[in-house]
Length: 392
Image 1: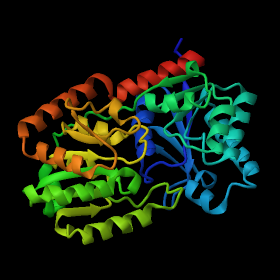
Image 2: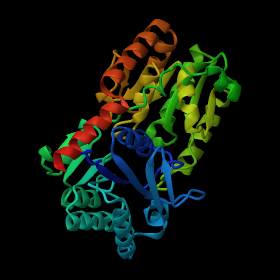
Image 3: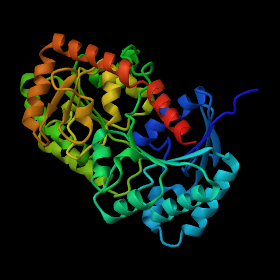
Image 4: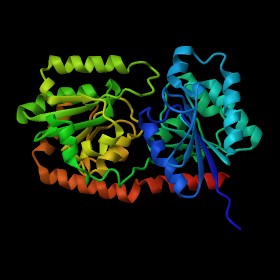
């Protein structure tokens, strides 16, 4: 008799073409779970030009307006509970899941979290939460502690510690670091196609800041560091990734980008900075042509998937001692860890790496091996599947 396939239904506010760390994580995890024999579905927000019902690498995608976080932010969440319940019930009835798995539903909207809890309890379905972030306010405290989550997955030990700090039982939280498509991000890609598309990068010392543009991501720190780096390496180019399709709950993205452009102009760095809304398909190539990757976050970054992309691409990375990033980047082993907002330290480490190819290669080789041993897409899917089976 054939073994019954485990049905897993995920819920998250966004999915490509919406771009972000959680969205990228889902593009990796969900198809890998499919390949391991699960039936996988996702309820996510509507997006202009996308079908309400579609598939992604075998995963059933359900898109509904009531999950569009940008729209909800403009509208407000008062009075949406009835519609949320109806949408969630229809999704669960169609997918018939053995497990429900929400991502970042311990914030943003109490009606969504409560409706999901009610359905899970009523139908006796285990309800998992992956906490990709934490917040410092009452809504986070309420939804993290008072929703009957069967179990919480924290994306880093930093996030687990923050949740424990609210009084949550540590035995009900498991850390599962993200995984990466180690075949897609390998460094062995066609660099020439990137140089043809972005000719300004040819024959340059390339510093790649892969996180989307924003003050919290430390883009201003990278720009200030570049002014110093340029004195020793006049041909250095800093790549900043400005993205169009994101969940911008706080509506700060455009304001941050405007400031960054002004800062570049003020420091006379226009010839040394490339800003573009790079498609996901270009990202492996951009890592491949880069000499150094930087992510000097000024916020307590919960994890930072771009770290794994850089390491898998055999590139050294410089991060700040903030949040979960030092769990992955080991100072002097596969990159450097610097103090928050210290653009002089960042500049010093960048110039050290640009001047020393042997050091870059050693860090890159070590980083790639660490990914292969600990952070592949198969490892994260296996760990997640083991948790499902434990509680199902």
